[in-house]
Length: 148
Image 1 (cartoon, rainbow, N blue to C red):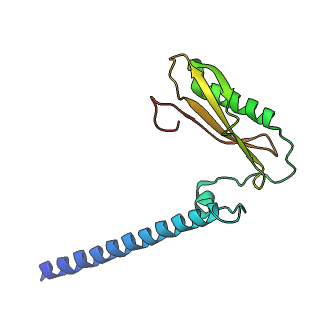
Image 2 (image 1 turned 90 degrees about the horizontal axis):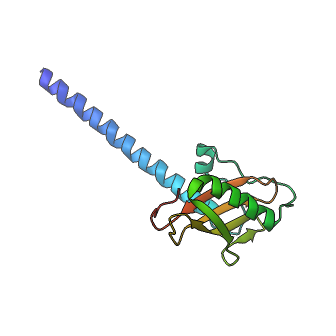
Image 3 (image 1 turned 180 degrees about the vertical axis):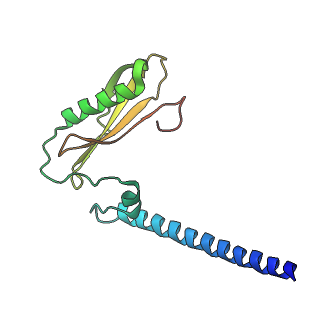
């Protein structure tokens, strides 16, 4: 009699686990779709569910007063700090750098010279044109194929 009860309990636990897995998959799919629709469209910025869950702040609102030259210098300082002693100098990449008027964000690309002599090392920063804040920065090189 106790073996039948154990089978029923394990069957119920299995059913709960299946439903929990299905619910987690649906939730993940919903978050992915929301992120996709928030980042594509008519250029309007909309915070996604993922932004809210991770605590990412929306871009600051207000008048854009930060020049590309100041954004470049802020990015250079941030990248120099991230690279550390390997940093030699940074060259502004005029072709790749741009300004997003809707978000009021400068995207700055810097080609970097490092002490190892490695080529293809570069930094990228998103700098708010409203409050001079670096929203995101990354450094990438051939020896390090992943963003730091």
